[in-house]
Length: 393
Ligand SMILES: Cc1ncc(COP(=O)(O)O)c(C=O)c1O
Image (tube, rainbow, N blue to C red; front, side):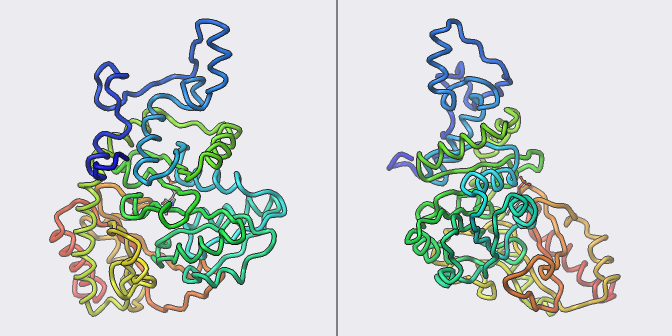
């Protein structure tokens, strides 16, 4: 990033080079598998730079290169790698730095499919995973073994939103020569700059806020160092991980409006959360910007904002009442993923996905994504939903 330019300005110009694209402002879709080399000398020369220029579609196209440039710049990393999904970004990063016999420290509040990957694929290949308390901070030291090669963080945690003390973790990890990765999807790399806090590898499910329109699946791995980037790129290439140029184009187009969309998600989510806080049904708000969220002080210290995804817990009610509430919302729809323009709601039981720390809350947890609808309409949708819970509707 140029010193005198702020992030909003860079989001408009990063990954854009009209001089190389016949004047087109946004890098167009390059659909290319085969790339032609006019001479044997050209081919031999291209082999030296196969990850940097168009060489063969699997290694990237100008569409993916442009997006990678932008993704690395937003987080302040050395370089980014596009992969087919957010989950692929996580799994590719893990297997790049783990070998048979190694030990992985994985945060207990991690995204469910990441946990599944550790418990199935990594286990099958002889990598041991220990889950740790998201609030462990420097206590993580007690779990480190000589075989520990990676500490994986996700902050805030999936569904439960614990904010991790990343500087404490990275400080200890450096002492032991352990790589620290972070799933930074919640902040979109916009409200949290992982490399300023000692993270080595950042993961983005680009599917969410960067693409922003619920119609793209894409992931990025962003590294702090050139050395790590080369290892990650070599693994991506060995796996035959390729990305559709159309998906890259859509994500790059989405990035141009990331800032205004996120600001709106943030503002509306804070308004809805404030309303929920004062409702008698709600026993806990799990939104990092509110005191009731574990790690709220860390969020205040390290983050510059909050996105549109958070959870709340209500007192226990009968399942049929919950079904009646969920099935009849006008705007809050049930569906996986988040980060698009629409509002979503999902019920989740964290107890099913915990092994380091028991989830003891007896209430019912709902995760919401606050979309771009008018916030008053969203609040009245929730209010009528709560009426259904109490049998008033
Ligand atoms: C925190 C987090 N990380 C990663 C992913 C995976 O992204 P994708 O759906 O692109 O595989 C998700 C998806 O919901 C997520 O919530």
